[in-house]
Length: 211
Image 1 (tube, rainbow, N blue to C red):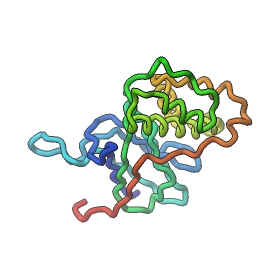
Image 2 (cartoon, rainbow, N blue to C red):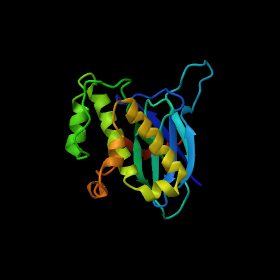
Image 3 (cartoon, rainbow, N blue to C red):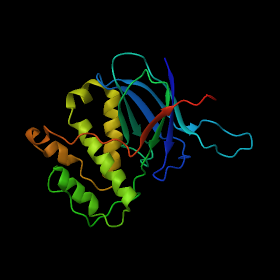
Image 4 (cartoon, helix red, strand yellow):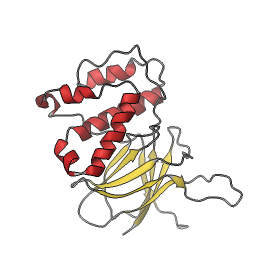
């Protein structure tokens, strides 16, 4: 199976030198987990200084099924980022901007009045103490979470996908979003959820000769 190098960057396109961001590779059709690893320094220097290459190495299986990448985080800093429908035959390095969530919720912001995209975006915008990057991160997490929970059959059949939803749901709860609203909403209103958003950058480039 071809080995892919997935490098993580922050919203300023700088290497994200953070350990423990979990990168999970799924079969996009079946929803089963293929491999997962935590981000590390991929090219540690002899002098102990961090390198400019942080991320993971994953084996991408060859086959007809497209592949998805989901980002989770046990510390709830960077969950919610995705890259969808990758081709396992590509022999490339993948560069992803991973957006960081704000660390706290605003208690004065009321719950959204519905699950309509405009109402959800309005809920995000009303958090005046979040900057633009943090709002983008929350919006990215929120709509990608909706795309997962709108497929209950897949969640029931894939324990690993259920764990992704659980991690993302907990991240939203920490930010004050009432995730119970999804269970209280009639099925008909959830039949057309917003499409999952990609992370801000998913740049696939040819592998360098040094690899």
